[in-house]
Image (tube, rainbow, N blue to C red):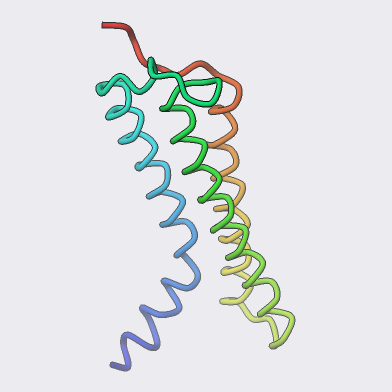
Length: 117
């Protein structure tokens, strides 16, 4: 029990946002592959393709979750004395939020990578 509380808890607290960002990136690859295979890129929905809408919804959820985590961590740091773990948690949260935005932005600007066939 002590190992879980003293080591795993702080490691997850500090590195959790980066793990969630990596899972989001992996999930987008899976969704693009499945959506292209299923023809979602050709299905019209809300003025664009169904695949783009699904990807943008996932991106919006990831941005909201990352932003909420950053907000929570920054608000929590103000209430207690900042230490190394608090700083690492805050910075990993910001890095994950920037990473999620960086991955989501091309969904708005670039064509989908599906090839016809």
